[in-house]
Length: 130
Image (cartoon, rainbow, N blue to C red; front, top):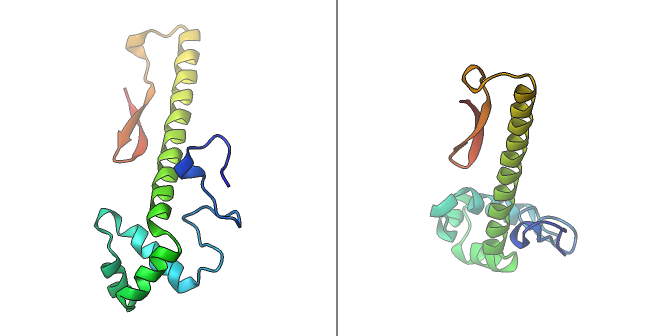
């Protein structure tokens, strides 16, 4: 099942309607906790590290990874985060356009106005002054 209007990696949901990176039907709490650890490890993620952190054998972690398709879920999570960031940046751009329009309508010149602009910072965004 896919959500309309969202990229494929973002929109994939399980048959039960949960996003792929959320706990899946028939996925136990321990298996999901291991997946969360795997996801949180970032680029250095490995099944061996997850096994060590959870005190489980590598075989069990490999089984959970295959059964619950961890690589696809990591991809879905990354796509979701990218989509959320893109929407936040678009929202700030609209806010900035409204502010520019308001200032232009008020007749303020370029040299006297302070306007917010989007400053990307490592995957997030913040407001800066120009």
